[in-house]
Length: 183
Image (cartoon, rainbow, N blue to C red):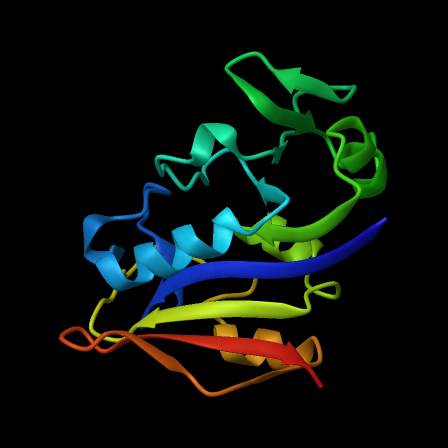
């Protein structure tokens, strides 16, 4: 198996990816970021996420994915999404889940939530951190385990990653995406 791992998240100024109800609010949705995200996922061989994360894009049903859940014992096809494999990481390895999903190589796009991001923290080749500096979500859900006690930047740095040059995605709202890569 030969994979390239990339993470994708947009966060508020306080490092949140969702509000207190675990929902991504409209205030954190920007056309430039949505376009970047959709184009990135169109290149992926496999999408990995938890039960509260989903990209909700026109191409979503066609994408192969691993949906993490602790509610199952064995790898199985999601009855609601035929291209999704339900995966309990306590019962099967990532490699076993990929084999079950019939994906042996290519880009693995990890799209959250916090526990899912953390599972791959030492495997990312690039983590694409989009930031919306004009949005705050007090009491929200941090993008990584350990946020807000630590910033997303601190956590990525502690896992051997460093930021590249940011790209501007939305000038009016100062939304950027920064590629964080291994040192």
